[in-house]
Length: 195
Image (cartoon, rainbow, N blue to C red):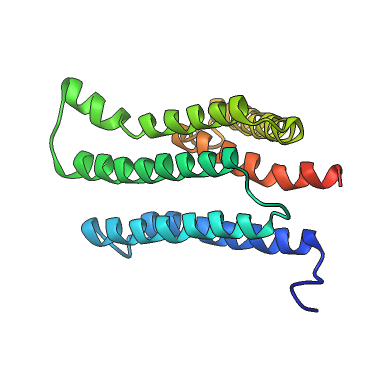
């Protein structure tokens, strides 16, 4: 069976399997301690560029229609915000590990990666404001609700288990990536419902 005759859901499933596989790499790099300091930073930068290329190019090829100016602008803004997030996160982690800090400087360096995440949220809001296609907006909003619901479900259950000391406290920095993962995965499923 050639790519031209594969059902759309198979291509989306393969795309998400690839994205999930690539998503495991930074966690493995961080927790396996195979690479240290600058080598880890360079490896993570290369991974971020490969991952973003995969997601942006792969999702564009899976779309059946041309990307309009609003979506192109959204993707450009999102790429800038995500690259900024990665660079600020790597810089923050490096400074926290290598430099002794205290007081307001420590707070600033520790919280700095949240700023590009706020830019991602602003980018999502701007897309909803600028998108003239009501169907595209509705899919986006429903996907965000599914992402939010998944985050609330996981963190609520994890919080109760943590209160009972069954498992450790949830790492709060993973809440936003979990939202993005569920939001991204739900979009093609929502669109498929209407086809």
